Length: 184
Ligand SMILES: *[C@@H]1O[C@H](CO)[C@@H](O)[C@H](O)[C@H]1NC(C)=O
Ligand SMILES: *[C@@H]1O[C@H](CO)[C@@H](O)[C@H](O)[C@H]1NC(C)=O
Ligand SMILES: *[C@@H]1O[C@H](CO)[C@@H](O)[C@H](O)[C@H]1NC(C)=O
Image (cartoon, rainbow, N blue to C red; front, side, top):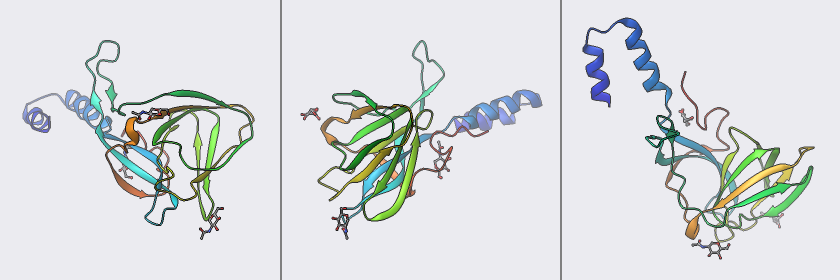
């Protein structure tokens, strides 16, 4: 792909065509960054921004041909949750290593012995990974749902509780627009 791009730049193309090619190639992100509720070696839950190893690959499937997709892996017992307005989820461990997709409302994640906090808004950046299961975290995390409307959470436990391949980018939630940022 890079060799092809380099070759194209060597060809006597019009400036407009070169510009379009460059923009298209640069605009597609390589991989997703996901806010994760992880755990440190002291068995405390913490927030981390993870870069998934699974690349975003261009689809050739009819209906989405040309769009990019990252594989999230094999799920188990997926559920759709309607959480009441102003609900207090309390202190708990993730019941399984699972994707949680917030499609509406908001979730505020905090911890019993730290001031770290993240607010996840339902929608575009509503996908997180909850990975602080009881075997890795003593107390887990606290989830509050302060919205005056229901919060919708789709939970996708991963088969066999396997953490998806990733690299840790930094401690804390992924910064705004850094989950699936299309570079302009
Ligand atoms: C951490 O939080 C738990 C649960 O609220 C508490 O029981 C514990 O004493 C706290 N302190 C430490 C150092 O873990
Ligand atoms: C799938 O979920 C069920 C219910 O939570 C659990 O008992 C089972 O062990 C899970 N299976 C796998 C392969 O993770
Ligand atoms: C992921 O985070 C890194 C580091 O902050 C950033 O450079 C990159 O653009 C982000 N990727 C996406 C797809 O948003």
